[in-house]
Length: 321
Image 1: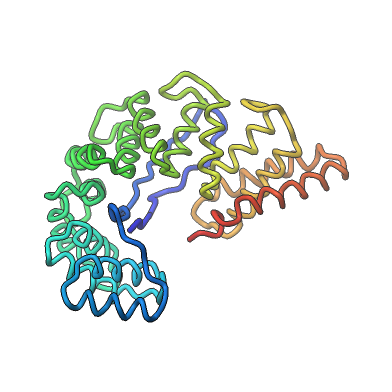
Image 2 (image 1 turned 180 degrees about the horizontal axis):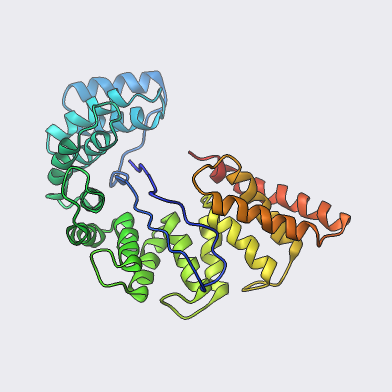
C-alpha cells in the first residue's frame, strides 16, 4: 500500500534564483505487483474468506487489500493485518511488505519498527522493490536503526533497479540535497524524470520544476509545464499553483491573467485547510490579489467561470485522500 508521509511540503516555486529544495521523503509501501481484482459484494467477501481460511494465498492478499483500502467492505486495519500475516507466513513478499507497512505506522498493530524491519527485510530478500525502498526510508529517517544516508541510498538503488518509482524519487532527493552522496543536480533530475515517467506524482512536479528553471537540465519552461500538468491531473497542488504562475508571467505559455487566476484559485481552494505549507498558501493568495487588481469585472467573471471548469476537470484528483 502507498502510505505517503512527506517530511515537509515544497513551497511555491517560481524561478531558479533563491530556490528552496525541500527534502520530501516518502514513507511508502507500493502496490502489489500483479494484484488480482478485488471483490465488492458480501457474497464475494464470504467466498474470499473461505478460500483464505483454507490457505489460498491470493485470497489472503485480496482480503488484506480490501480491509486496508476499505474496498468492498469497511476499512479495518486489524483485519488487513490478519490476512497479510497469513500470506506473509507463507513467504509471500507482497504480504510481508504490506504487513511491514502496518507495523511501520501502527495501523491495526502496535507501532513496531523492529517488526517493520523484519518484514521489509524478508520481502527485500525476494527482490520486492517497494520493501527495499522502505528499508531505505528507515535508514534515511533513523527509524529503528541508526540513521545512515549511505545505507539508505544503497537500498533505494536496489528498489530502483527493481522498478520502484518511490525509490527513484528518493534517490532524486538524495542527489538534490547531497544526502549520503555528493550533490548532483543533473543526476537528481535523471532520477526524478525516471520516476515521473512511471507516473509518480511528486516526481512529475520535481521534473517540471527542474525543466522550468533549468536545474540539472537545459531550461525548457514549456516541457516543465507539461510535467506540471501531469502532476496537476493527480491533484498535486504545487504544480497547479505553478501553472498559474506560468500564465501570470507568460513563461512557457502565453501570458493570460484569466487563465492564471483560474489555476491559482484552484490552488487556493486546495490549500485553504492546510496548516503545514503556509508559504504556498499565502503565496497563492498574494498572487491572486495581484491578478484580481489587474482584471476588469468582465475578465474577473470569466476567470471565475474558468476556475470552475478547471476544478471540474481536477475534481476527482483533488478529492482523493
